[in-house]
Length: 284
Ligand SMILES: NC(=O)c1ccc[n+]([C@@H]2O[C@H](COP(=O)([O-])OP(=O)(O)OC[C@H]3O[C@@H](n4cnc5c(N)ncnc54)[C@H](OP(=O)(O)O)[C@@H]3O)[C@@H](O)[C@H]2O)c1
View: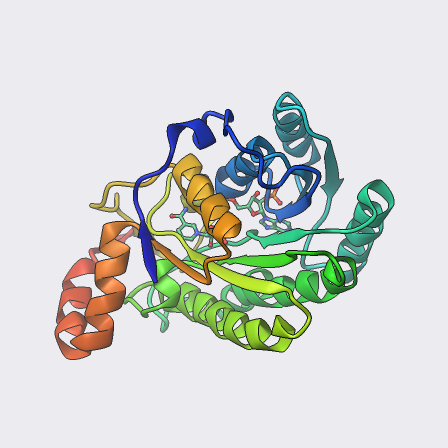
């Protein structure tokens, strides 16, 4: 486990000096905003050609122009990762444009807020459909493109909340815990094929995440009393983890403290977690 709180400004500004991903192909799901869009820029600054996938095509094309301005090729593919036919087309277009894939970044994801007793089954299924089933679907579809490519990687974006369940976030935490478990299994399943599987767990990050998050009926979260990382900082840490093949990257100091406290003093952390919840009901 490694904390990444610092990052080289050159990587974030798109002027990374060395280009460890030159001529490599990186496919990023959820590249239309937040961490995914920043990751597209950061991998491009490291020399990679980028496949950008998400549902909002205009946003993707805008992001693709940014990426191309860094001197690499970009392909935008409108893709709802919860739909098998979209994912299959995404892989066909990637294969046709670039002849294979070196790094898959499974980043598309969505939050869910509210007590487990108040979230609906539909909301829980929707979040699992995107955070878990789609990650599995995209990975499975990408494997034929990754096989045989030297240094191939799958980078799964989890969350610090995948390492510890917190009150009012149980549905989201469960989905990311499933991502963590799948990542561990996949890592060993693919080891003999030379495909590395990395886990990147951001903490609280500035993005559109809170706008897109589902809320249980009558529940909304107040401002989080934590300093957010920028999406660019998360992306820079992701690319560094990718360059080094680091298996597990937990971001932000509070995130790392939480994971360690939960491992060594879980009972004490239960009490801290209770106080961290800060619940606000919309209709209170
Ligand atoms: N922000 C945080 O505090 C935080 C903390 C820890 C972990 N994370 C994780 O980081 C990842 C990125 O989140 P973010 O913070 O960058 O949030 P974001 O700005 O809301 O980005 C989410 C991305 O997922 C895409 N997406 C959603 N549904 C999709 C679908 N059905 N098919 C394809 N793409 C879809 C969205 O694009 P379209 O709407 O265009 O499809 C968007 O590009 C997520 O996995 C999230 O769980 C975020």
